[in-house]
Length: 312
Image (cartoon, rainbow, N blue to C red; front, top):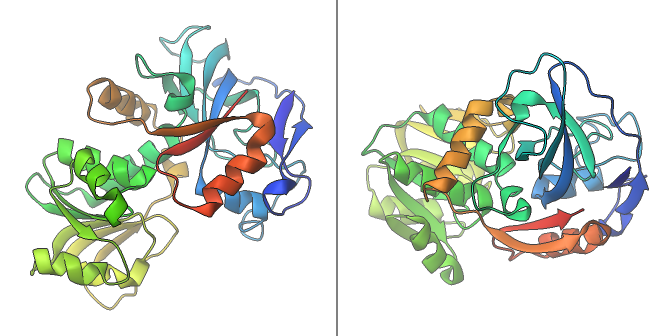
């Protein structure tokens, strides 16, 4: 079966079409015939070997990828679901060895998939699971109440944009950062206040909210640089494992989406949010799977708004 992976870690050109065996279907699992996979920053780190010391790769070729969309092809023993073979589904993938999403056929836990949003194509649907579930996990961890103020850095990105939209739907006031070119986009996503992004974004947020904000979702991975924006006792979520500096009474929650990988109700809730117009799927461009290297080059060059997607 075709997949896109690396036989040794490296730059974008290390990606190549490879042949991997079809995985057996076990109890509690489903098989998805993959039509589209999203390209995320995490994928470029996996491709380059950034996480190889932490997550030992036991076999090559190594296949990255954390989002899929396609057709439900097979349902394993013991699976209780209202989905049927032939339904269009999306899913989140936790890469282990050759088990990443960049492949034309994948076996997943049954609770890692949900229907694609009505009216959405496979490429657009593939942009939702990983970033949407990360945003959902971040908001769940902070547990802010309607009327409280949430700051979002990296608001023009996929994770940050979903946080803004979900937070607004839940009654939060949102202050978000943006480059000048992205300000209109971030306002359209629903931010109440937009401040200029940069190293001094904490000061800009404090200018708007002198007492500090109640919560912060740090999609820009600025870590300690943005903590001063949050009031004492406030909530912070981070996406690269940062757990705070311990210098103030802040509740810092590093979020790891793998913890939500089988939260099917959460994933299906994201589907419903798209159908209600709460969330906007943001597809930037598609590439045939054979051009994965070019997609990785584009992502690493920066400036992409929305997600690049590989198609099989």
